[in-house]
Length: 504
Image (cartoon, rainbow, N blue to C red; front, side, top):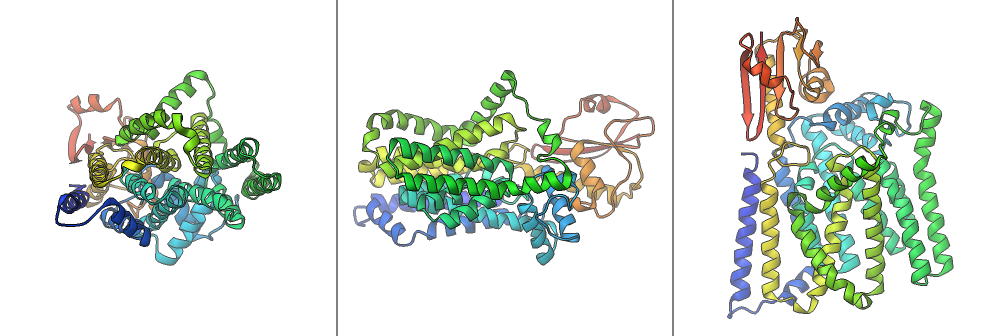
């Protein structure tokens, strides 16, 4: 099973909860939430370290898998191409079609990694896994500094158990790095460490266009601070100037892209923008589900919204520093949602907003029950954590934000192995779906050293083989299954994933 190790971790978590139950309810042992909190306060690093160790142990079994979706047709080939030529941050030195016009920081770093450690599937997936561990630490220490240790502990655990994060944590994709630099940008902005703020903000903008939400979000948040919370004019102007500097440094990439290539933004992506009312409302409903409801997050959302109903009645009791941070984070979340709604949308694009949403809801709930925190509540919290771990373990969709993606990748790998073992000619005409075409045709895809050269989207009279997969449904599939002139050569299945090959 794809989830064997993960289920083992769940068993370990259940054992820990049982142990806590024995300790906390025992009349012979003097243990309390206060003592538990004090121990965490003395050694806070233990929490992210344990989470990162568990994350590494869980993901280790999947690091050798081939790339999936955008990894396969964009990021693996682009990183390997840069590594084979010369790593660069300058647009135009690499064919824009290879990197889709995105800022090149992520590919620059991943190509250096490939140069130093090799470009096997294992090493290429290890690089983003380390970035994901960095995000775990960023979530923990930002929430700890902003809202306290108990918010930090449960925010970090709950975020780390989200299937969207667990799946994406080893993908050679941009979104986790965006989330890391966005959080670090806010962290240093609130700390008034302006040099680190400018560096992290610029790195965020050099990672992906969606990070530009930071610019208006920070500017609006600072303006609200100035107008409503009497921030000093000098500080306000300094922060606006630094926000502008981050924008100029970040946008330098697109200025160079305009000079070297002839356009600011990738024309194909510009063509995806649809501002029609129907499309915007549809995307907003999808985004709502992704951020707030999918993969068990609806329970966090419901608890958070109930808490906010009470929270709104006592807003004057919220420390001003906490309120300002909540405002800043909320502005970014809604700005991120708006940006996603007007552009091409994929579930993983929203990862950067999810830790902030969880952080806000955990803060609201923990503040409401601040005086009621006791041993029983701690047990309830641990039980909730176990519940979300179980929800994630049952994430059996085949998309790249679901844990069963590994089953689909395994099926694709087995199909490539079948083709090679049965000596299917490299020039045989094969009709197959979009992803499989890249798997079979690009030697940088991580699946096949010698590419197949005659791959087609649609069948013809000269088609030799047909390959179908569960991940991309072909309307012709049902008809072909009934066609007596076609022979099923091989069916590979694992969980909900499957792959079939037919011949004439």
